[in-house]
Image (cartoon, rainbow, N blue to C red; front, side, top):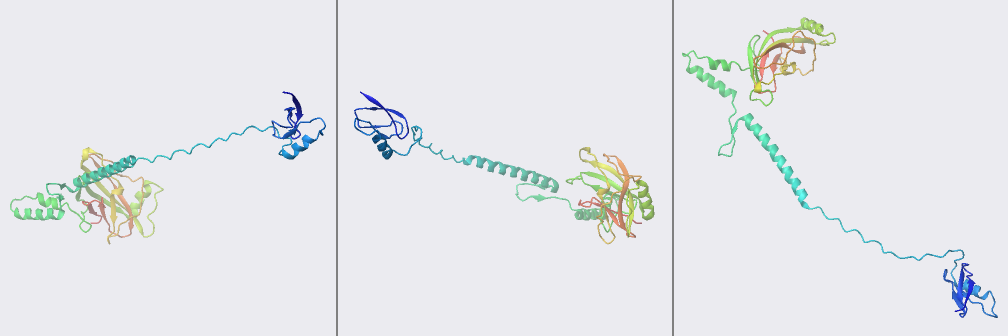
Length: 306
């Protein structure tokens, strides 16, 4: 086959064409190229190419474009099994049941609840009034026997209106308590108030504050003896266990901090004894009473006046 070299009039590429055909094709841009024959104008092929070919002057040969289909969408996420949620719910129920069991055991121990065949719990918590009646009946039946133990038990009771007098010993029995599981004996040894009390406070520490207008310091010296405690645990005696209540029944709730007093309470074990001051700023001339562990059912009350 005889070929002839032609220059594409559109993209300028050199193309070899068969000289036996009238029109060739540019293998780069696709333009038609006339093969010049004898007697034809040299521009005929160029004009035809410029008219029929797309405008790709100066455009380099284009690469072949392959259409790649997009990747398929990801499969839908699997739903979580309900087993996990089920186990979580079971765990919560178990924890709640354990908490209820612990609280029930504590209540049963505190109130002496006995569960028999009858599903209704039988509360056998002791009643002080019933004990008093029994004591009185026993005393009445044994007037000639000289037995005075029961009357001694009833004499250990106290209240705001019937506190222990100065020098009398009151007993706090907290062995059945939730918190204060100990038994102690308390006695008021001395009551100091007014100017004398302020002198003691001021000598204890120069930074102790004055009582203020209409107020005076009251220092009440207690002797506390440890009778019993659970597992022989240490008993912490401090001023916060004593509450001052005014003669008209108002609690002194002011926070008072006094340091350097000549006698301060200390921790004691069974058989130990400590002496210290319970103190408060009270109204001038008031005759308050003091209660040991006011929030306990079997708290103990003491008078501060003769």
